[in-house]
Length: 281
Picture (cartoon, rainbow, N blue to C red):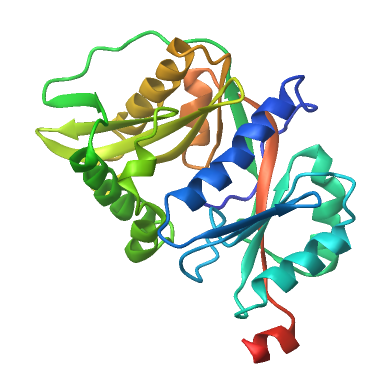
């Protein structure tokens, strides 16, 4: 999603390191869910080479782990890594520690994937349970059949914001890995039809909320909010101290209403290999 303005963020919270560690772990996990992804983590960088060439941000991506790595080195090493077959990639910019990296991305004229940064939001307490309306059930994902429903919902939900269904399937290709004990997935069904989903990655004391989606014809009924509430509460029940997510422009007011607060921002920039690398690929 894109917008025209960015919500004001406070200074980095005391638990920023844990929030950031969860976000980085989500990139590693995303690679594990694909059939043939590859990661390289060395000398202050995390690089994820996806099973397809699509530079979605969740894969074919680079994130700086050590803020002491100079921005020009980040891009040079990423271009070398992804230049093996001339593929484009996304550069993650995460909050204040990456301010110099963002300045360099702008200087290098990398293309921002959205007009405004995504609010990085946190919730610090469990939310009350809500009774479901007639015909609506919110259930925890337990098996490969449920995961197939997650994939179908995600394909339809994310196609409307530019992620092709085939790419979604490639990103969610390993039900065995997706059902690991530190992942919590929920589905909302309306009259038996799966229409909304969300997941939480339980790591570093944080319930990182990802893959929130609702099919277009079921939106504006509070269903995405219900599954987001369910995975966040599951995280608190499992001993996590905070839930965290990166909000779209569409989701931002919903999360504010739920009690989430903006503490930082994230942003993606699209980078392409150098001309020589592109020709050799």
